[in-house]
Image (cartoon, rainbow, N blue to C red):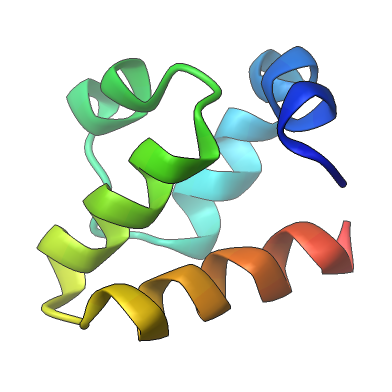
Length: 65
């Protein structure tokens, strides 16, 4: 799924994203606002992962949809 499709489906997916990454707050979800790069940054911040690891995890999640 490319970034445009991800952004377009964000409202439908945000509950699923928050369930998958339980440490994300409602404010995090609002801040991400459909931007996959922001999701990578927030996952990195909340889970203490390096950028490569967070990006792989987000890409794997998106690919599974």
